[in-house]
Image 1 (cartoon, rainbow, N blue to C red):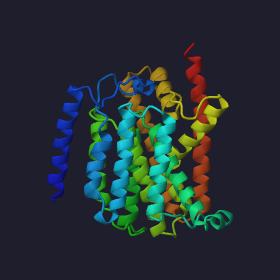
Image 2 (cartoon, one colour):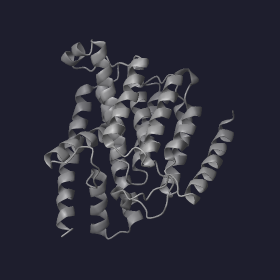
Image 3 (cartoon, rainbow, N blue to C red):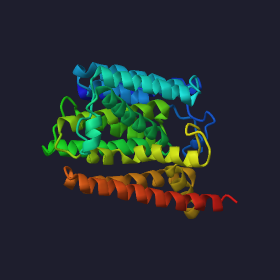
Image 4 (cartoon, rainbow, N blue to C red):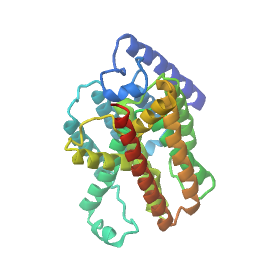
Length: 341
């Protein structure tokens, strides 16, 4: 099927789907969640995940049918969450674990070289390796959901990762088997523009799907190119991963359930600071906050690409990001609660 025909066909499908859902008040934003005040007061369809999945069907080589199937299950799980059919965070996590673990075992997806000898020894046991890979994928899935709160932040972040992979592939630095990255970037850019214009949101379905797809792809890419430092792959996903781990730690300190939603994620504090300090409206503060975070990550990735096999330098980038994130987090957290009085 011609690429452009498929592209416009999908646009038409999404256009009519969004109109239908909006008219029927179904699968839209403004369901009462606190994080929605950071984006828009309008009713926006949560169809970004569907949009990406349709593109994904064209982008993915048909030899990886299991990835399509399990991606569809992740999408459905997210849609049920968006529709408030699955309200229990614990149940959603259990279903995530089940889907991801089945996918990892079914595809025998393993990580055998972490550049850490004692960990590699432990990972020689298949069931430990499966659990480790599943844990990594789950961290990214949930981190992807945590960072989804500002227009273009989530999609833009993964768009940047796609550009990095495309550049490395085009310059024959890495091999990307069976993945038509260039086509997917076009479709991802289209979704990014629609999100920028407040025409489409990812919702839980889209953020889960993005986290699942990119965590799996990057593990596959690492296994195809073992000369790459595994810490370069971790660096590419450091933001959603650290967002998850940091959120769990801070909520435990505050004696809150790690699964309980709140409006104190990093991007939300950045948004509050920019909106309050510069006296901006919701949309302007939203977009500026997202671009600042993504531009920072783009710069880090561009620097790290020059040392793709050097684990020491990659670890240094990761540590720097973590420290900077933590410092900025506490400063903006204090600023927020001083200005709420």
